[in-house]
Image (cartoon, rainbow, N blue to C red; front, side):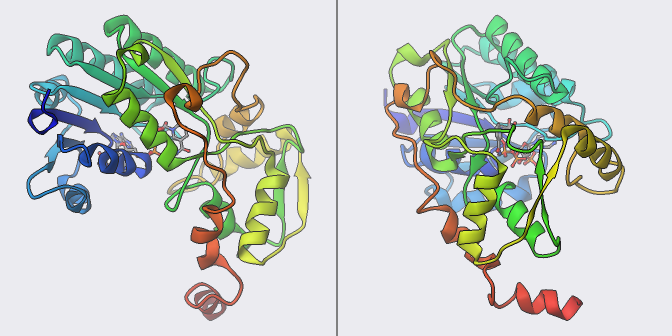
Length: 321
Ligand SMILES: NC(=O)c1ccc[n+]([C@@H]2O[C@H](COP(=O)([O-])OP(=O)(O)OC[C@H]3O[C@@H](n4cnc5c(N)ncnc54)[C@H](OP(=O)(O)O)[C@@H]3O)[C@@H](O)[C@H]2O)c1
């Protein structure tokens, strides 16, 4: 089928992962609808395609609005997700009910391919986040059995909220917390690899449909290793202080009461108690024809803005001192 006549709808296309997915799919020439709560926040995506190829469309996430997005689309990708609950945005609403409604609409409107982004470890972690994601997967597959579920580990890339966040924290903290000592372990995966996985599911063989893929990078690492990578990239150093899970939960309890995005929540500490790594027998990036990219050539590129002596960071910091 001619790709130029096909339409993809991407929920959450303005997000960190979403923008890379938009870029990958746009290169194939398909028309792309970006379902967003604020269309003006999606204008930056338009240069990824030809004139008129990428269209931000207002979605208020009511059933009618979701159906309106999906009607006439050949493929749908859902990458809406939250890291913490706030106000009306509960994990149940965003990770369970919303994917369920999208999946039902995909079935009703005969969408050919539906890709849903979940998260690695949801089948074993005890956090509310993981449980809501797992329930969401079950709902998706019950309404649209050909859906493909992708479960990334922590995602890294220029706009990530992971390496960037720790590097930013280093500027004002005298030490860095080793939450749970050396117990938490994860396998950070490169954002471009996750987007390529979506691309390969959307345009690749039918065999990927109805399957669950666990997307992980080439290296398993704990916090000490993660901080080491940041120290090397920024030429800065901070002592590491072990923080048992119970103490981290107490701190998180108070941090999550502060206004704005919480630095840490009790539920996130709970997530860290289960390994976030690829398990034996799970389908992975290599089953999608992708060799996982390591952090070595990527992370130092975008962390250099935090390096010692960088203008803008140190000067702003010292101006506030
Ligand atoms: N980043 C990671 O390390 C990571 C790891 C594992 C799994 N994941 C999963 O991958 C998916 C994409 O993650 P991401 O990091 O790209 O997320 P993100 O940057 O926060 O983007 C999520 C997008 O969802 C949309 N959205 C719709 N309703 C929302 C609501 N009520 N609250 C917040 N956002 C809402 C937003 O788009 P509009 O504002 O335009 O509506 C937003 O751009 C999520 O399902 C996430 O759970 C991410």
